[in-house]
Length: 130
Image (tube, rainbow, N blue to C red):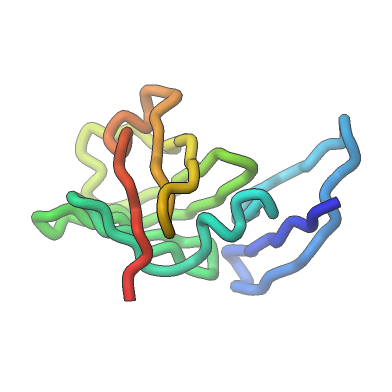
């Protein structure tokens, strides 16, 4: 079975753990990157037509709009779901935690809103930068 790489925001360290058996519990997935999406959504710098997104190896993110307004917080990806939480900065009327579906698109990933919290990012395609 595939392994799950866990990024721990507090310590900045990583651990590798076996994926639970069918029906098993995954427990707290803060900072977890599923093996199925780990290659698609890795820490690094990404940009869409409207936004830039920095995903830190320590489980933190910075999302910056065209006008320079930024939101910072924690990120995690498990299976095909990205969650952005514990935010500060220019959140405006956007509600967090934000839970979005991610799918591979070219060298990057596309975000789809399956819940109202992700409407702001719906349809955004983030490609790696640099």
